[in-house]
Length: 337
Ligand code: NAI
Ligand code: MG
Image (cartoon, rainbow, N blue to C red; front, side, top):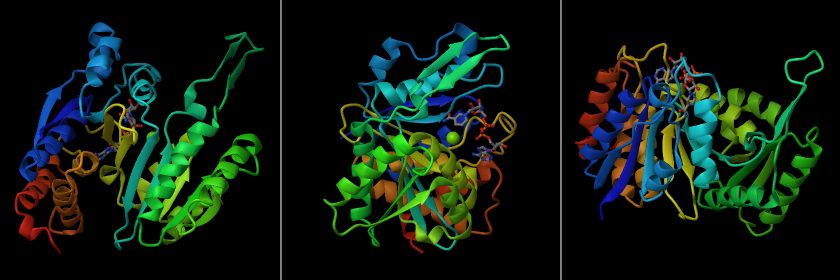
């Protein structure tokens, strides 16, 4: 069955890495029909469109969305992030943000970030804006339903892993209301998964362990803001931002899920042929996995792993890395190490 994919290349290096991902999908032999959507900072600068309701309705009809990166320096912060990325996450109910990391020694761990609530819900406002008495509040929305569905997804994932180990990361000692809700929910759901061993870490301590002892982690579940920061750190300890992939999942499949590299549009290197396309290819691999094409997904992942491990491949240069990945995707017998 052909998978209909909406493709949002976006801005900066977004289209550069997304085109490599599409080539890799084709080379792997996946049955995918892509449709391009012109969205992002450049589109906004041209006609003021961010993500209109008609386009959103159209996106809902696709099996998945593949995104490069959006955002340009000329657009004030917040407009594209809130109007496109967060709107898609909220409207399509992409409540799980899954980010896998693989260390050079082979150890892998996965962060499950709650993706629709917390500090990103947009609760808050100004009072007396622009005066010396100005007040800004920025709330954090935590619902039992929202925490529980992310936590349940993480337990299911941990259950299927070798060590069956799940760590809750929060800041329960200071964020005593949200932290209490998360910890209680976690403990209650844990009873249903007796085979999964659990741990808890404060987010600041987790940062130390990400750098000094990432082997202690297998699956991590955390809230939206902590997950955002922790996964950038995860990218840094696992080979750099050019390798970090992510999936924004609607596990109930009431709409399309969205797959994108963790990195942004990188205006500093856009158009120079320096963007590493690996994160985009790995994100496309997560997409094929979610759509049920495990074979092509594995072929693409194995090709990326082989290229990352191959010292003969220069780790800079979009074309060089792309060629190395594509050569291995199309020759599956060479991808087994
Ligand atoms: P960024 O991820 O675009 O860049 C950070 C640094 O990493 C830069 O030095 C860049 O050159 C480098 N880098 C990023 N991806 C790379 C790759 N594939 N290969 C090699 N080097 C790479 O983050 P930054 O600079 O904070 O944001 C730039 C723009 O991207 C902003 O407009 C921001 O809002 C947007 N953004 C969009 C995201 C998305 O579409 N999901 C996520 C993060 C940022
Ligand atoms: Mg981030």
